[in-house]
Image (cartoon, rainbow, N blue to C red):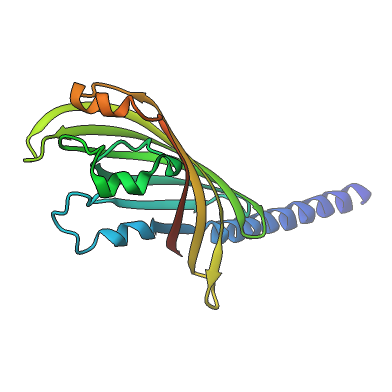
Length: 214
């Protein structure tokens, strides 16, 4: 009799455990949210058309929340450079744009798909790292292709996540980030001469990302 009672209790316990596990999995799956976002800087290119300084910047992020602290994502980005990216703020970046003294003899188009990892640190404060392999295309001022190359672009971010609305679906993420490019191949001589004058990194770029949780 005792054995029968023990067996029944064990089976009941296993049944409850199984049901709780299934409920837990359902709740977990419901909490795995997605985020789609883009940097507000790309809105500044609207209406610039064929201007020399139009970067034609397009960038989108699709991220998945693994849990309350860890977020992974995929990043797509393409932009057009008219001068070296390594000119720092204190090197007179804005003045050089006005004077056109460091402009390339053409354009550099960089396009890539990469990955990102975002870690929530405290409340909305977060740190993130992004790795973006890029395919490079160099053209002259008439948009005729000169050469192709490869660049490995990485960026490091500190920012704050601010959500709006009853369901907190809309959000913005003001942030500061730094970037560097460790591998940069097959740069034409005319472009390389300008790049060599400046750093292979850029520090303290402010940005604002706008997104929605799905």
